[in-house]
Amino acid sequence: MGKVSSFNALVQQYSDVADFVTVYVREAHAADSLWPMGKYALKQQTEMEDRISAAKTLQEVGISGRLLVDSMDDLSAYVYGSLPERLIVVERSKVIHLSGVGPGNYNLDEVEDVLKKIK
Image 1 (cartoon, rainbow, N blue to C red):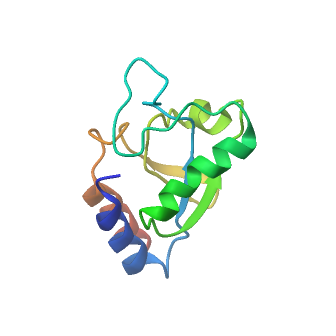
Image 2 (image 1 turned 120 degrees about the horizontal axis):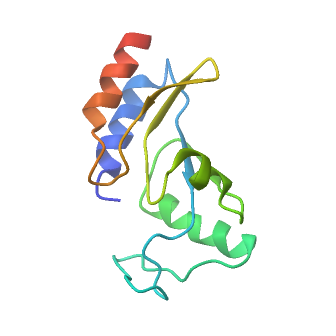
Image 3 (image 1 turned 135 degrees about the horizontal axis):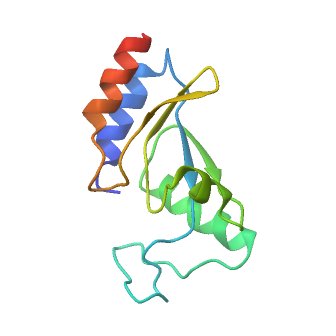
């Protein structure tokens, strides 16, 4: 969640060429796991209502764009390898950029370069 302000700046700058969507996936460092971490250490969700409630923490920190919630079978996390987070740019139903797994292995500047080419 440390890169939210930088992400929000991209949303603001490129909202005319891209729709920004965040998909909340299961907790990577849940409070009830071996490696609880962070200010928002939440318990692992076992029901969709709990996952939706947990996703609201992203709204609390002020993340811009549309917010979706992964299914309880973790389909998005599985398909995109997005646990704990990953940046993906899709153009005309085709993935044109797939970042490393974050927060340490992706670069918002790379995403911006891709968006500049689309613009």
